[in-house]
Image (cartoon, rainbow, N blue to C red; front, side, top):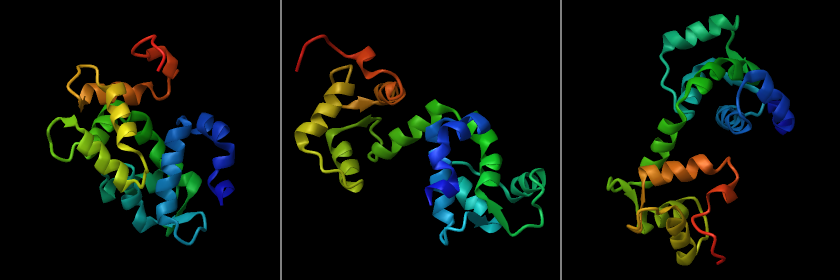
Length: 177
C-alpha cells in the first residue's frame, strides 16, 4: 500500500511538490484516514474533513475552487496526487511556530502555560508510550532552561525546532552523564 501513496519515493515526491518528507507523510496519513477501502482515492465529500485533519479550516467554496483548479469539479473522487496538489499551497504557507504552539496546548491541558510532569505523563500514557517516571523527568530536565521543573512555550518550541537539526549542536553542558 505504501507505493500507492508514493511513500517509497518520498525524496523525489517532496522535491516535486515542495514539501518536506515529514509534511508529505502527514498529508499521506490524512489521506489514508479517509481512503478506508485503500483504493488510492477519497470521496469529494471527505476532502473538508481531510483538510481539517491537517489543521486547515476550508469552506465548501474553497474546495469547489480547488476542484476546478485540478479539473475535477464533476468528479466524485480525488486521487492521492490530486489531493497533494490541493494541499501543497496550504502546507507551504503554514506557520511552523503556530503549529508547534498548537501541539504545546495539547500537552498543557490545565492551561497553566507550562507542561508539567503530570501533563507529560498523561500524554505518554495516552500515546501508549511506556516511559518510566525517570525518563519523563529527564525529558523535562533536558528542555527546562529556566529551572522551574516545567516546560514553557518557548522551551517547547526550542526543543521541537531542533528536532531536525543536529542534537549535538545544542547540548546544555559538556558534562558526561
